[in-house]
Every structure is written in C-alpha cells, then in structure tokens.
Length: 227
Image (cartoon, rainbow, N blue to C red):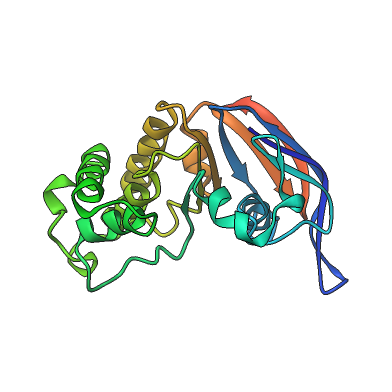
C-alpha cells in the first residue's frame, strides 16, 4: 500500500528532515512511527499526502508514484486517506455532526447521505449522543474522536494520525488508541506517529523508530527501547 525507497527530504539546502528512508507498509498493516520531536515523523506523513515532496527517492501509494502526480490529481489522492493532524481544525460554530458531515459534503455528497454516514461514524467512535454539541462543549478527548470520525466517514484506504494522544490523560490516550485499533480492523491501513511510550508499550503492533530522519528500528513488538 505504501512504499518509500531511499527517500530524503532536505529543507533550505541544509536541514535534513528525512535521510535515505526505505519503508514498506502492506495493505491492512498498523504501524506506530516513534521518535523524539524533530525525528522526521510528521515530514514522512506529509510526503504521503503530497503536502510536501521528497528531495530524492520514490514515494508510492497504492503503486502510484507521487512525484508523477499532477496538481489537479492531488485531491483525488487525499480522498484515499483519513487524516488527523495535531491541529484538529474543527469548526467551532458547527455541531459535531455538522463537522463530520462536512467532509462528505465537500466531496459532493447530498445532505441526507452525508448526515447518515456521519451518524454511523459517530456511532463507531462512541459519540452519537454528542452529535448536536458544539466542539467547545465537549472534552479534548471527545474532540479527538470527532476528528477521527470525520477522517473515516468516507471509509478511506489509509488512516494517518500525528500525535493523536498528545496532552491527553493516560486513560483517554488508551481509549483513543484502542479506537484506532478498531479502525484498523475494518481493513484500513493505519499509521500513527507518536512519542507516547506508554501507548506504544501497551499494544503489540509494528513499531518503526526514526532518529534524525533515519529509520533506526523496524520491529513487530509491543515494547520498544530507545537507543
């Protein structure tokens, strides 16, 4: 589903964010991307959705070389993804249901269909009872769940999340990660960038560790240890 071959990303001709990264993520896999802030996790995710382009190497999504994409094709690529970045970008003046349905309405779906799908996504994340609430009326953890529901409402092929448990209490972080596991079981390839060691330690999934832009570990374990 996702292949990176000898991928590097250099900013301003001097700052190396990724350095000769080679990685393969099969369809349906679940991967934790771990590493300290600045290790290259967010840059890697940005390349996958063509928010940025590699300085060298090849990035493939579903066999498609992203360097060959026309600008007009980038929106179609991004429809294959469900994305939750650290900035949730929820609309404060819209209800929870409206925030989730908007993702489908932008793609041209009708109001009734969009809201039916939004209700199903909110039920999946356990927030159907909050559908009429505004984002400011729910907790931080619930806001993350709304963002997740919005990201999966169109049933994407790939789900990516950048620090989805940041600043959450341990029990809420565990709940969010369990939800991500449920999404993965729907057959959605899932990549989660995190530096939350407790989260990674608690789940037996593939762990890819980045350090200074390089992959330093790629293991299928529940525990990881830093160098």
